[in-house]
Length: 330
Image (cartoon, rainbow, N blue to C red; front, side, top):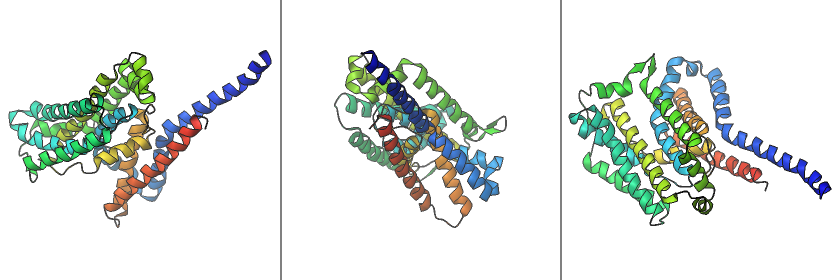
């Protein structure tokens, strides 16, 4: 018995060490690629690393970043939310309609509308046991139709006042949207890593039946998470309206896939149970950097941005799949 235990102990330590190493690579891969791409592209395009351009990259990526924050929570839980892009568009339109009632209403109304959409989606998924793909795809189409019906074309906000300053102003020389993005991710990381809610998300994503046996209220957590995702998408829409001084019913097209791409590139597994917000934020910035590099080249059409996003998503899924198998010892 002692000889067997002695033989198995080093193997167990090696396996645990390998799991920790793979988990570290999985969570920090996007950050490493972001640094390498930034330095490499910066050497070729001198203007890329200019402080003004870096601020522009992060500011432009901040709206997608808020959506990725909610999407990451959903993915870690083992779900999927395809309605976020359309919800952003509807959020811009709702802000345009509600701004006459004051900037707090224009800022909060889209978030509340997004939470209500998330409540419906989450209830159908958690209570009626419907597939997240089908439910959120239906929401995507329905919300898009509502946004187009409310505003067939862009709606000018006129004199937005303080509402416009929220997304266009600066604090300490840094655009407000960057501060909003960083604060949102800091709070998200705190909730994910330091609260029972975050522990429940990982438990549900890892094994829903086991989580239920541990006393996790799976249905409530699912509904709350879809509400959070919808609220963040609506808030992103409100901030985009403030940034552009317009309600845009066609805004956010493709954001549902870009949000998944950024999260997966950042190490959040599509199968659930694994992910970090540091990685997700790195994925957001990486996609923003790629789009800026394409703009720096100047001779490539906007379609190459979608091609690059798709290619990175495919590569990320392959790498994550390999790392997951390695982590599991397969």
